[in-house]
Image 1: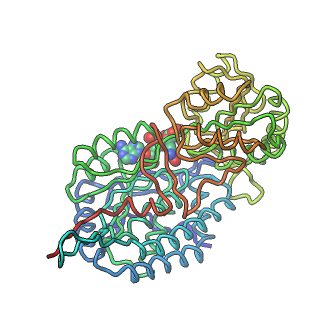
Image 2: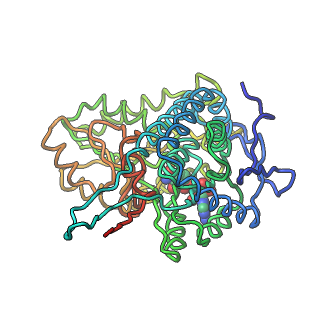
Image 3: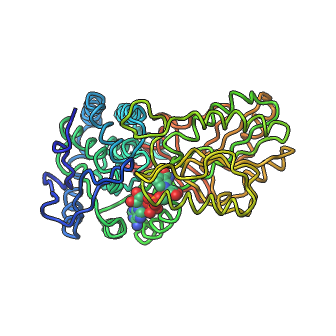
Length: 479
Ligand code: NAD
């Protein structure tokens, strides 16, 4: 097991490590206890300029490294992540709170992402177009876009950075990543695995600090050619405006508020079990978590009874305890948000079927919560809760539930449960959502595209689309 003093929570800029002794610091807090477990340095403007220069220089040579050489480095990094998974998972749980088994699975998932992009980077094919003139060649090339600025949140501290970093590097881009200050060590572990696998200095740089200072400075620099952000719609809109000033493309993975529709003919027990397990994973702090449960009036109470029983059986606790099934919320801001959203829903007329309160005063634990018959006026029906709260409403017919599901400006994920293939096809067609799960909730694999529509963002990560977003098209005609 790696111990705390072996974790190097430094800024990584080119070949330099900028340590806390030389900078202002931010504490890293264990959400299960509220105690400080480490600290990170705050990047200065000079640090950011150094990171930009390092990414710029490294890009010029990395783009010329053959796709096959890049593949070998990324595959080796994936192998190292797997080998180091227990230590990385331990520190992820310490900083973020999720059960350590989930952290282990997440590290394995990040390794799979590196493997997949390593392969996909070898297939960034161009094409040859038949020319109108004899002796003239019309060639289309796919080239890396340039140095990328990547901003990632705290809820999946290893897979979200992995998606951005693996795709950018496989495409031949260099990258400056700013992970969430709450959860620094998993992205640093990725950087270390890549360095040990032979990634040249400067291809991946890691900075922490004041988020708005970092994003404003990096996005304004002419060195940065693309941004990628995962986080709230509010911050995403702000970064999109900054990117627009430099006409820079952005991939934005923003908030969600997933409608989850259960038709009367569904396998009710199975749907309730499956959605309850999914809802409370990562204490509900997942952008694609099922949130608004639209339950046909004939099965509402039966579904809620089963869902409630599963939720009530979950063992809450410190994620480092292997028996824990749901950990704390990631920070005190989430506790404040839960208190405010649940009390508002109650005032609006919602019934609390389960939970609805904080658990204990130590750390940031919130009980698995089920609110039923929640009016649309309640804030929680309109704002992303990003916590362990499920809300239900009853519906009578197909058109009514489609209108309800599509009512919000979000369009990230949506789920439906039915045994009828016609209903399944129709609901898949009607939902305004970047991703739809029908009798299935698995939306995230390395090989499938992940992304939203409407105010949930634009662009996809994962799949061939994920690599494509780091490439530009060049047409060369040669006589
Ligand atoms: P937040 O919006 O302030 O921060 C979210 C993430 O964005 C953090 O990692 C933060 O470091 C980063 N960030 C914030 N301002 C930034 C800026 N100006 N430039 C660059 N990065 C910036 O909110 P929060 O309190 O951390 O989380 C609250 C909300 O964020 C949640 O309710 C949820 O809606 C959303 N969120 C979404 C995801 C997701 O996976 N889509 C993940 C985490 C949080």
